[in-house]
Image (cartoon, rainbow, N blue to C red; front, side, top):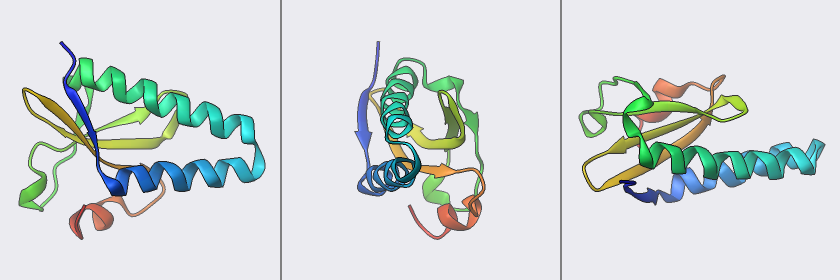
Amino acid sequence: MARQINITPRASQDIDDQFNRIAQDDFGAALRFFDAVRQTIAQLARMPGMGTPYPLSNAKLVGLRRWPVKGFSKQLIFYLTDDNQIQILRVLHASRDIPGILDDGV
């Protein structure tokens, strides 16, 4: 059974920002990115355990996992899950200072 999906405002902004960056060079690729994010999140809602644990020192993020966006392997979805929902916290490019971004607050 798929969990309810909750996309935080920061994750939503991350998706919009990356869409806009990609669209500057290739609008079709940006549309594919957006669709791939939706598909990947839906897959995670069905099978949340497939993500890799991503331990941080921030106690609020115990259980954090990551998974790449399908077809955009450098775009990583960071999420928490429980029995009822999957919470998408951030969608970040792998080249960014991910521990710094996540430890500073989500």
